[in-house]
Length: 346
Image (tube, rainbow, N blue to C red):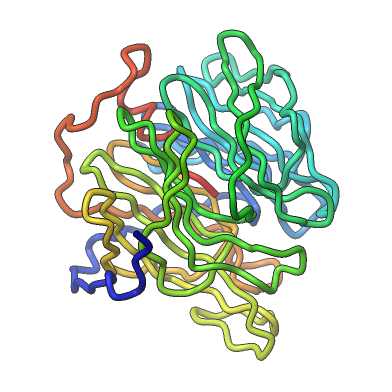
């Protein structure tokens, strides 16, 4: 049954939930991030130059950044997930118009890149998650940001893609996360047209076993270019983002007259189908990278309307109840830290 905003609730928490860390060396928005163990890789994205191939490693224990081998196919508004100790970078765009199908895999142990089979449908800003050793790409945008309904699944063992039934209400720039052991993906918000002006409050659950979509409790406002991350408490955290305003006025700073940026953080309980407001992000922004390591959520880079600044933030969120027990079943071939880093979207 479709639930509305009545299922939102509020919580007052300590600001200690967030911690500001050493900033990313290169200013970037449209960047993507993924964790392998206790290191995070921030890949691609646009800075204040034409550079879109950067790959920088953040060492959580040392609070230190190191530059790594750049991605061969530079891109923005792509997606990245970690699986079996490697980072898979999928889709995106080079010019802000034409979508990419290219899939490239980064091996942190050797600091090398390898090309893999292309996506069947080139897409910008899809939701990408890992379930049972496979990578699901949901939605996104085709040429000139027309929403795509495509759902495709990548098997890294066979290096092959499989097409699934289309999603019923396509969008790009949505946020998404999956629950290991449950076979379900949750898609939050996203842009529903090619102008960047129309976003949705819809939240939908996709059952990967039956390919059935179920509407869930809506988010507070229409928003896109934001993030969602699952932690092993069983909760999904939805944060940040932007929407078309047309009148100026950017929460948290910036100077873009057409967009408003948000610092909201919402905790979503799949079991209760409820959203609860949590401590806000220190920096309101959209188009940032997220990664999960040791149950904490790292938000890196992004954009809040400024010109050549404010795109280097590195902030960590510690959800309530951390450290978490091994509550959710995982694929035996994967380590829990890798799964935590993989279950998020952009």
